[in-house]
Length: 301
Image 1 (cartoon, rainbow, N blue to C red):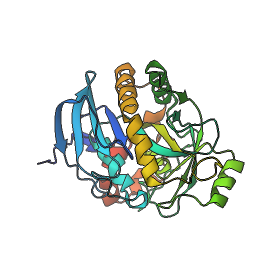
Image 2 (cartoon, rainbow, N blue to C red):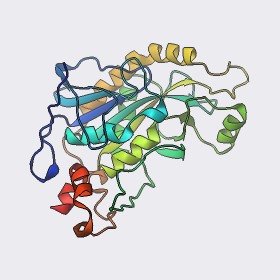
Image 3 (cartoon, rainbow, N blue to C red):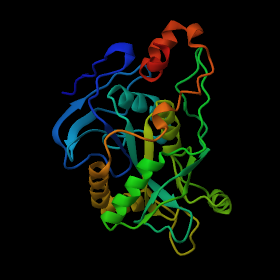
């Protein structure tokens, strides 16, 4: 049985149990090659994550794996408790999160079976809690570059190393779902020159930035949405079939990326809140400080 094993240290910060987090989307519900594994259930001030988190060792590094949609793929994109998922990673000491997601292609040269390492997002979601802040504390973070460039570079290089066709830059338009796009919507997205379409990643990226966690994503292209005249409209069956074909590639790329990640961080993700907190922490309600201890603890102590 999974247990809640997160131990907090002084200042609201938890003892490090993992340095890298992987959030798996459609088709990636587990991480192969992990040793010394155990499952834990992490309680957060924002509720329960999508499920138990698997802790283990991969390429000599401690890793935390979480299935975004839960085991058995039972949670809609709009139902995912994104705040709990990211906060749980923070409590475990994770400094880098790698996301793996299914996406549809909006361009001819982004073909099903290929990977895209996203560097931009466009948010078209409607009903999501996408910030940890509020309830007496305001923060406005820079989000011009929503993914970690260093982590993204490692992921793209890992794809090349494993001979997986990869595109190093692109814009992911995030829709609410769970329905796929209408033809009219797909054509507008193409006119706006978006590259791929999905339903989850922008919310994770926003919360990871607030939590000062590096975030990068491997977008696994599964289909041409519904716009391509020579391809049938996207179906869930088609997506799962393509994902299953490419799951082995994703596992290989992740293993290589984890191996190549340098110890420590030299990017700015770890200090994203330094100049973003607007509210004087002296006047922030105690309950709010406690709720956000893992995120703002180093600034309020």
